[in-house]
Image (cartoon, rainbow, N blue to C red; front, top):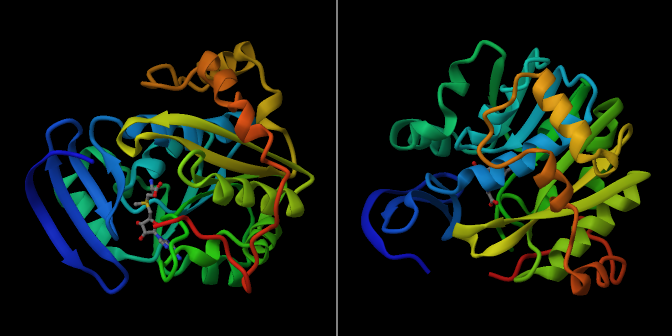
Length: 284
Ligand code: SAM
């Protein structure tokens, strides 16, 4: 899919294959188990769309949990909200964090050194199931549900029930939810699964050039519904929080994110949900 200039780093960690390569079109690129995760040139489409719709919808996000997000760009975007007092980030693979800090420091931009950050190396599911704390916002930025992959049990109804338990009243969660085109059934299954657990649930998507697809996100809320915020509401909140130099996200983009192609909308309610016994998988 992408012309490679040179391979910068390659390793099989305890958890997955990690590659960092330099490409002609997207500059440096992080790849896990053969799948593109982030590129220097276009990562802001994905990370701003993952983080800001729910962070902005929450009236005062102070305590945030990030599961996954090893390269640190999700953490970087969360910390831009001045309301945030503490972020716990739980990633299963210390090697992704180490090599991202060394070869792709632009992605975290010092976020791991921020005194509000508490990094924990653990399986996100185990962490949530044994967690005694509660959070205002939970962002799940783990690798796609690949068969035998480390993220497969972070897309099931049992996991989302555990996530709901550690959300404060008014809390909102969001997860990346794979490609709406290449893996439509997986995307709509994640939507139906979250909808089974949360009274308010919704989905949206953004174009992500390096994934060569519209990328899906699904949220569940115990409080505000991000979709109900208008362009003007979003711009006012971004202004108030001093978040004016985003590269991609603003009120206009917020409204656009929620417009799904008709053929995808029509499939949202058709099909089953993902359970631990029968998880959903993205086609390899
Ligand atoms: N942007 C990406 C995408 O769409 O595929 C996700 C990016 S991020 C690099 C994925 C992170 O999830 C990796 O750092 C990986 O180690 C982490 N991860 C995978 N399974 C996990 C689990 N069970 N618990 C915590 N972190 C996990």
